[in-house]
Length: 88
Image (cartoon, rainbow, N blue to C red):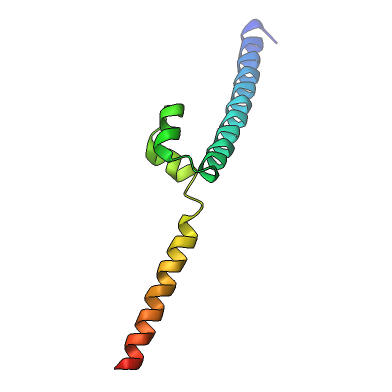
């Protein structure tokens, strides 16, 4: 193996280590964003802290209460529809 082969091999190893470090840091940040949303921190606040957009933060860490709110709204709509149908 010549010197160029060794440099290529070293660069490939360096890239693999950097990719692993990035993936680890990304997973940690995503977990912290989810934890932040659970602690009632808004996506705008966390976007300012991270330098990412509010939309990206909201996509990664959606509002944990949104699903429950949406279910309650749908339940009320269904109840009203059933009530109106029975009155007709």
